[in-house]
Length: 184
Image (cartoon, rainbow, N blue to C red; front, side):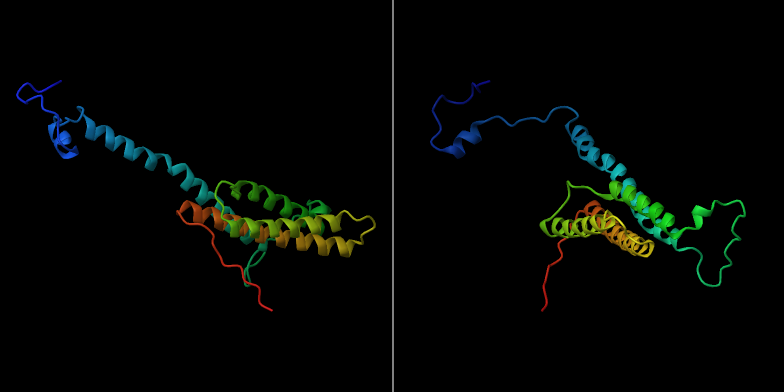
């Protein structure tokens, strides 16, 4: 609305044009609306923190649990009704591999990645693919299968730890930017 007390002379420059504008009054409750908008992302972050904490707990607890009791701790006596397949090391490796793959599915997040992290993740995947290709060869001896499954589980542990660390770093606002160096 024009100000009747002012003359209708056009302003000479931008400073006069802006000075001629009436001061804008903020809307009622503007500060409260702004505070609610600023607080919303903080409230929406807690599921990410909870998921990160769960992934980190699983990444630590699963390998620790699979190690068994430490030295000086009496292991519980094995049950006599246990199936003989449970004592088979190959069956244990199958089970641990399945657990690590399910943990990896939870820990992996393709939305947060750097070139270095993507390259390292691809190297882990290539290593697993090579082991899987070797496992598909017909006529493998039991010892060869056992060795390959142990390598597969170790590679999955490494990849799961890497992905969990990457997720943890992303939750803290950083990313995995290690320098890749080849030393001859």
